[in-house]
Image (cartoon, rainbow, N blue to C red; front, side):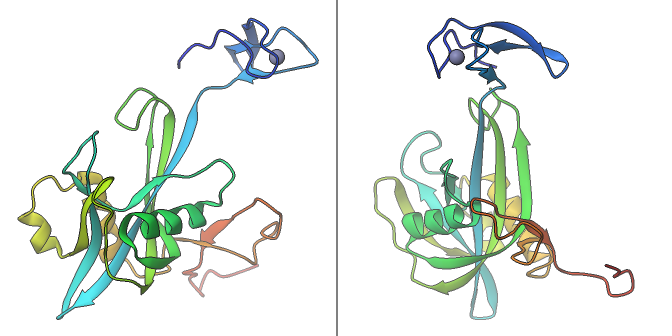
Length: 210
Ligand SMILES: [Zn+2]
């Protein structure tokens, strides 16, 4: 974890404090109370499927800029700290590929520790399945060099299809829509501002008891 020198709240030089079973950087001012737990981020990407002439194809975008310029991947990006996760992925899909799609469920996620391939912060990267609403793939030519729907067979012939994206697409192809974690608006607390709850909806009636 990257060391911080000063408190981001009150600018005091940080000291070390034993908290939650380990030493952490902390503000010496008790009225401030800041403790540095580490740097965390949340990424999201969307699998959007479309049937074309009897084939199922998935939306991919090609990165126009480094890192990994030229690489094909699912549309996605970082969620803002004040943005519900399902809106973040819907926004990224529209911004990067001009496709309007709505979150159905979560098909996979990756957890990567800080300083590894996920980036400088400890990262959760959620892969959602989205229902296509409308829009033909279009790209800005700068951040995104190309965009389109491709079958797994077509991806075999493309260079630099990101392995994580391909895995997410495969997860979506081998499971039923709604069988993953879905936004649950009836869950206890789901109406709280700033909360989004995801639960399993594909309930087995033989074990159902509530
Ligand atoms: Zn402080």
